[in-house]
Image 1 (cartoon, rainbow, N blue to C red):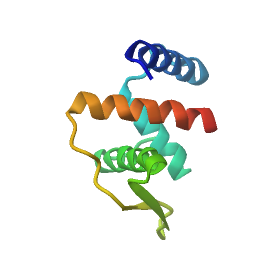
Image 2: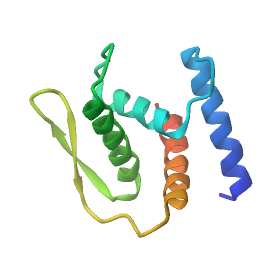
Image 3: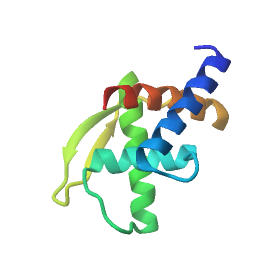
Length: 113
């Protein structure tokens, strides 16, 4: 996917989420990962602790990286939280490249749900 195409699809995705959730502004990358984490957890709470927010973003990242075989779903623990097993390390890339890779996977994920 060319950069301009990804930029367009990413902005389109952010606007769809904004409209769907009735937000005042388009969500940023971290917020979208947080929302995917909640979707994968399947439990909605009024407030999440800082640690839970970090864990939700991790869940989302694992789910997205599972598309290309970096992670594999292991199962749900007693508290209902999903766990993933690392199968292969993500190739070394700078932060911007990692984010762009995950943006592609977010677009793919949202096309499935």
